[in-house]
Image (cartoon, rainbow, N blue to C red; front, top):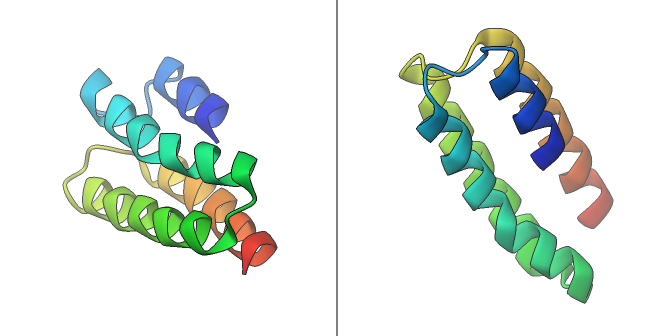
Amino acid sequence: MIEEINRLAEAGEFANHGAARSLQAQLNPVVKFENQGNAKKVVQHVKKFNKKLHQQYDKDFISKEGYEKLYAYAAELLEIWK
């Protein structure tokens, strides 16, 4: 998902660089806990990511297309780790 955030940022789907960086930072613990196999923590941090993503969408910091793509990726992760 971090790569997708980078692609979306390059495509201008974020209002500013800080919005993209904020979402990337929210994913760092997800990667860490995925590598450890800690499903409970992965789910917890993906839910936090979704909350941040929704907040950014509400504030027009991310386009609808970008929001939908990242939300779909997050939903897939939740399905895998639940």
